[in-house]
Amino acid sequence: MTRPSSPSTGRLARLRKALNDFYFGESQRAVRMRLAWIGFDLIIIGFFILAPLIRDRPIFLVVDYTIAVIVAVDLAARMFACDNFKAFLRRPTVWVDFLVLATLLVPQLFFNFGFLRALRLWTLFNSDFFWRTVGRRYDDTRIEDVTRALATLVTFVFIATGFVYTSFVTTNPGINSYVDALYFTVTTLTTTGFGDILLTGTWGRILSIIIMIVGITMFLRIAQAIFRPYKVRFACPACGLGMHDPDAVHCKACGELINIPDDE
Image (cartoon, rainbow, N blue to C red; front, side, top):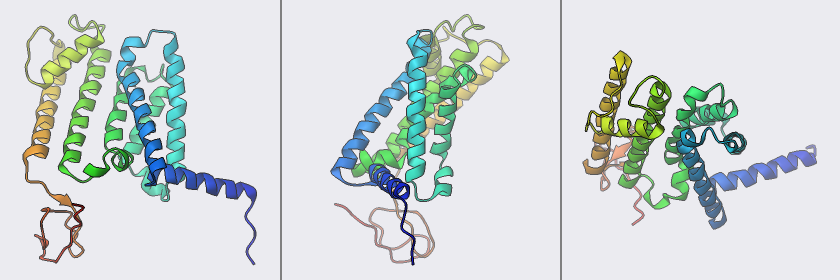
């Protein structure tokens, strides 16, 4: 004879189902709710990017802690809605969100690491949550690859800008504001190098070299995503090869007959 479930257990089950529908459901209501959340998430990312410009204003800490509560609730809700807790914790985007949350909860302790909050942009555009909602038509396509590459580039620009600003604003005569740091990062990243702002010292030169190398690599990654022959993600049932030509009938690695779904 099975024991009847307690009211609290029933409420938790209903809450978990509601969260699961929100994060993973395909209904129009779930999609609209996720679209609203993504729009709000973009506002939060905008606050992160502009934080160095408004950090001295009295309202900054109020907004900072409010966003910390929102991010914490979102993480807890995603964790509760997920069916596999271990798989959830293995996702790199989850640990990035934990890092962002730490900088929000203790802003004074992690003052010099506040620029890492820009990683929230990377986690958004690399999440299944985003592609199931905004990019459903473009999931597993060339557009997704290009968008992810561009999001990575933009994220790196603001992380590098934050690092340059935090590290050199009081020691380098050329870095007097956040805009100066952004200007230096973009000119170095694109290897334009006007020379009007330079990072002095050995570490300044090393950082400039790193920004240039990473910039070249990311531009090549974007070009590769745009111009290389496109392949779809489809695992071969025999050998497990994960990428195939869109019109492939047989696996290029083992010759197994494959049936790639085509929505067109």
